[in-house]
Image (cartoon, rainbow, N blue to C red):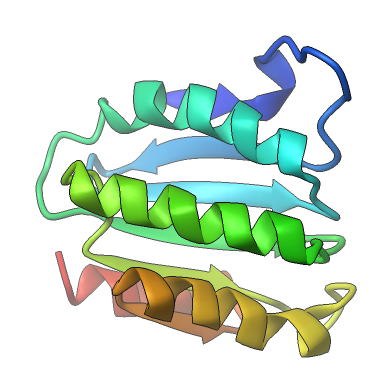
Length: 145
């Protein structure tokens, strides 16, 4: 199993707030464990590790499952940069076929942030759906790969 973590990235000025760990499941699903809240520096760290880990995806098309832990809060600046990140991945042919985001009931800010995350994927022209548990998200994602 290939893995990567934003904790392994050296930061320049400000320390990233939040953490993202990526692992590849069955060579076709990238599982992101995202511990928020998030700042702009975290997106820079994510850019650095994501391309390395996603090279290990052996089967195309592939899917991603993003599981939020603790908090999913982020600033408008982060959402704007995330849209740019998603669009750049799409232009480069590196986007997942589908993205499933998991917000369980205990995630701080989920009620406020779900629509913001949804909007990021819509603006980037990517297929997205959110779920309350990991199992449902994986089951849905597997239908597309």
